[in-house]
Image (cartoon, rainbow, N blue to C red; front, side, top):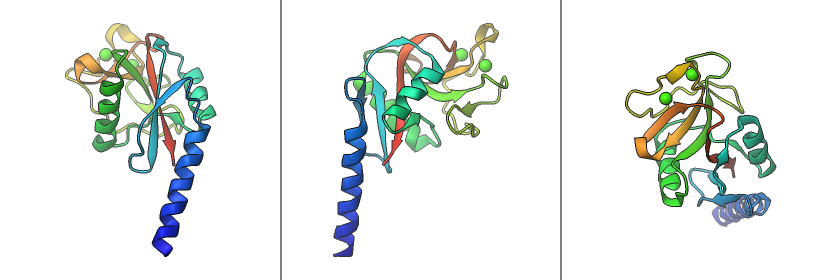
Length: 155
Ligand SMILES: [Ca+2]
Ligand SMILES: [Ca+2]
C-alpha cells in the first residue's frame, strides 16, 4: 500500500513537471534518475543568461553534467533529437579562465567528459561548454555561437 502511494506521488510529480514545460520551445526526455531533460527546438545564437531564464520558466536550469552517467544520457538524447551539432550546457569559465562552473548553481563542473584536446580556449575566448556531436564529447566554444541548449528539471 505504502509503496503504491509513493509510486502514485512520484507519477503525480512527474505529470505536474511535464505540464509546466513549454512544449512549443522544448523537446522533453523520458524521466531519468529523477530528472527530465529539455532540448530547445530552435538552433539559434546562444545567450547563457537568457537560456537559463527559459529553463527556469519551464521548472529547471541549464543542464549540470555531474557525472558520466548523466553525461551519457544527455549525449544520447542530443544525438537522438539532432537538428544541430551544438547542444549548450550550463558549464562555463566566463568568470575565471580555466575554472569551469555551472551557470545556475555556481558549483564546480569537475567531471566533464571533454573530447580530445579540449578544453583549449582557442583564440582566447572559448568560455561556454557545448556537447559537440561531431567531436563525440564536450568542447569549450565561443558563448554566442548558434546551437540548441539543454535544461535539467528535477522531478
Ligand atoms: Ca575559456
Ligand atoms: Ca575548444
